[in-house]
Length: 228
Image (cartoon, rainbow, N blue to C red; front, top):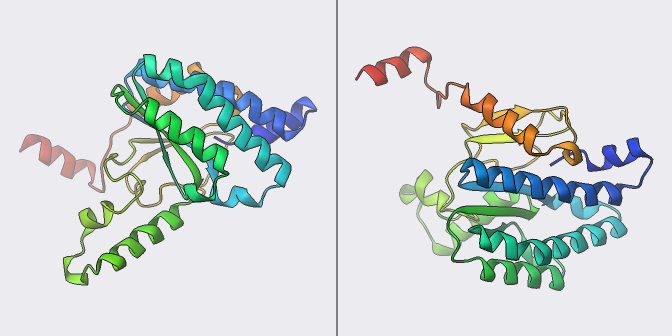
């Protein structure tokens, strides 16, 4: 969800105002995803690198997270949306962790959609987390395969993403879900996140629907599988 700062500068406002406007896009996209039947929606809300931002901005982002959860959880719960979080959550301030724990508990029985917030998250850190967990278990090398490795990721029950949406025209993955994105379809839009609302989300879904997913296979191999 990129472009909050650039959007704010274009309006002559500070970056925090851009983050506030970005919350409205979160509301819109969550609603659109739910209505479209999306089962899992992961939002890259705060990266491990974001801790290097100015302290005032970090505090503002943590405050926005708390206010968003308190304001939105009742509606999310009514609509069957479960809130989850992935990342190095121990680095979050205690009040942010408390709000997250409350949101997760309030929505734990919801089964229509999982809203997964990537917070204090980095893809490389997640892979290291899995490796360290395997080492603590003493798993021998000959017993290690992709499925066993996967079980040590932050959310092992969540399937790999079908679609990654990147706003603001940035042509990079930015350390997001590095293991899980192996065969994910990418959609890049020039639209900045504060302007990315339901109509833009629908455009991404429509573009994805026109794709032929290959998972490393050629068109000829796929055709052969279909005939078989």
